Amino acid sequence: MLGISIGPGVGERNGTEKDTLTNILSEKDFVINVVSNKVANQMHLSSGNFQPEVDEFKSVNVTPMESMIVKSPLIMEADIKMECRLEKIIELGSDHLVIGRLVQYHIIDDLYCDGKVNIGKLQPVGRLAGNYNLVENIFLLPR
Image (tube, rainbow, N blue to C red; front, top):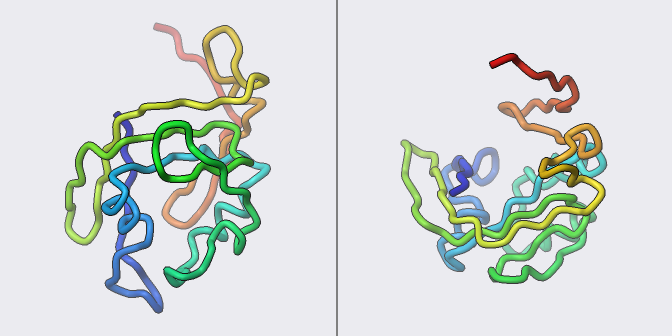
């Protein structure tokens, strides 16, 4: 199971549901594309408030890619992509916790080594309340 948090629309779309939530409710599926440093700017641009009729893929310069199992499109430029079927949506105040069952996992061969994702090669980017971080200081702790 995987989860994503979706907050309410802000700014000019204040109080409205984001297209992401509307699409999940309509299609009963969603995808998670892991953001790496090479597509961080596109990820940032995609957090804007787009009107429903705007093609966000074109607007942020990423390529839609057909999923193998779910209806929702993947982002071709993402090195790790996960297709999920909707399990449950939990309302948390004005936010929503969307829980999905992973049904298909995609990873480029160069990132998969000895049964693990090579985080150094992936260079994942995280979003922290509107700020971003590059995951690069990896360390092991003794058991």
